[in-house]
Image 1 (cartoon, one colour):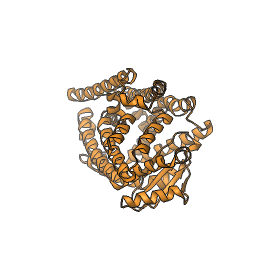
Image 2 (image 1 turned 90 degrees about the vertical axis):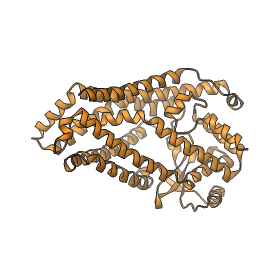
Image 3 (image 1 turned 180 degrees about the horizontal axis):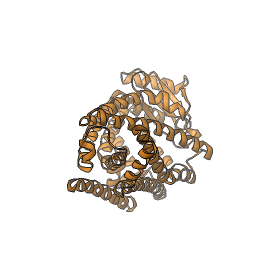
Image 4 (image 1 turned 30 degrees about the horizontal axis):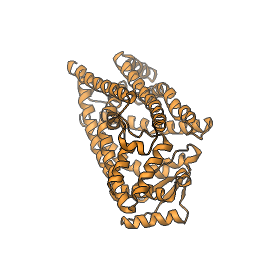
Length: 409
C-alpha cells in the first residue's frame, strides 16, 4: 500500500506542479521578441493574451475539477459504495452493474465539466466575436458529441473489463493492441462518418483554387483526390484547414472562411502546408507513436493497479466496477503529464510541414503574412511564455513560424 501511495503521490505532485507553473507563466508578462513589434501592435498582443488566458483558464479548471471528482470518488470510498449498490440493484449481474456504474460516473464527469465547456465554447466565443452559432445549434452539437463519446467510451469500457476476465495477467497487452487497431479505424472513418454529422463538405469547385491544389500536389509528387470546403462559417469566423484520413478517405479540408477572407497566395500557403503533411506521412507517423504510447500506457496502468488494488489485479475474473474510477483517474492525470511529449512531436511535424510548404511555393512573404493574419484574426498569442508553449502548444508559436519563414530566404 505504501508503494501505491508513493506512485499516486508522484502522479498528483507532477500534475499540480505542471498546473501551478502553467498558471504562473500564463499570467506573468512574457518577454516579446523584437521581431513581433514589426507585425503586431501592443494592443493586439494584449487583446490576444486576454482571450487566450480566458480560454486556457477554463480548460485547466475543467481538467482539475474532473481530477478532483475522480480522486474523491476513489479515496473516499464513494465509488466502491456505488458499485456495490449497483451490483445489489442488478441482482449481481456483473455487466449490467458495470454499464450502470459507467453511466453514472460518465454523467457525473459531464455535469462537473459542463459549466467550463459551455463557458469556453459558447459564452467566450460570442463575447470575443468569433461564434456565429445560436444556442440551439450549440446544444445539438454538444448532444451529438456527447452521444458519440458515451457510445465509444462505453463499448471500450465493457471490452476492457471483459478482457480482464479473459486474460487476467495479459489484458493490458490486448487492450493496447485493440486501442492501436481502433486508432487506425478511427483515422479512416472519422472524415467520412463522424465529421459529416457536424458539418457539410463540398468538393472545391473547378477554378483557381482547384488548379492550384493540383499543381502543388504534382510538385510534391502526389495525387490529391479530395479537396473539400467545410461550412465552418455556420459556427465561427475563425479560419483554418486540416488534413485527415487514411487510404481512400484521405482528404484536405479548407474552411470556407479561409477561402472567403484570405487572398489566393495565402490560401496557397495553407494548402501547401497540408500537402506537406501528406507528403511526409505525418498521419501515419502520429498513428505509430500513438500505438506505441497506448501499449506503454496500458502496461503502466496494469503496474499501478497491481499496487493500488492487488486483490483485483491478481485474482481471476473481471475487475470490480469500482476499478473504473482508478483507471479513469490514472488516464486523466497521465494525459496531462505526457502533454509535453505529445506536443513536442506535433511541433516538430508542423515545423517540417512549414519548411516543405515553402519549398513547394517559394513564396516567403505570403507564408509570413499568413501567420500574421491567422494570429491576428484568430487571437492567437503570438509570443507565449516558453513554458506555456512547451506544455500546451501543438504548433510552434506564431512568432517562431514567422521567424523560420524569414530565415528560409
